[in-house]
Image (cartoon, rainbow, N blue to C red):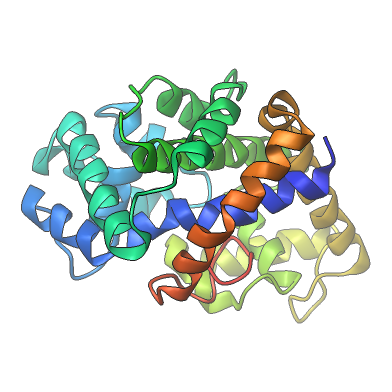
Length: 282
């Protein structure tokens, strides 16, 4: 499978998944469960970690990778004191249902949902904890919810593979962020959302400088850019299995069908224009 197509499918599906973290309906459902909504993090950690079960902060920090363990510890295991994972998962689907209905309706998504589910069900989950946890969940009946579930499983599958690529490149969690900021993926301030202290960030920058990956100003050196480009290539390669299984024609058809929902998601104004993923406006 052409890795350019693999990356395109990520760009198309990521906004459909990410809406859930920013939509008013999600904050309303979170508040109903008892989570604070002055910031998005209490519910974020619950929404994203719920498929893993009522796990502790060590498991969550390991799977999420880029978040400071200290930050994770502020929200986990407190997340499960507000609501059990099963309650969180049910509320998550209610939030997606309401969000999708309000943004682009739910008619006409049957084919896209079926194709996305076929790709998601072909995702290899060995060594991929978040993808495996989502693969164990029962599929919803409604096509628009199936589409969201498939988008979510596929993005966690890709994310698990990205962690593997970072590990192979010898980048620890904070170094991964520093090196990504160094190539201009997003301003450093955007990465502050991951909870690392200024001292931790500076120490990681010093370690990368010692490896010749960033310069004195913190910008990526040619070696640093080459390393990051290799990580992105490897991430695409590791994310290719679902699309190879779906096949080029069906994948191209899904890309065509996702155009309308993607435009609605991007045009909603809900998604941040700068983000730690370094892709488009999601």
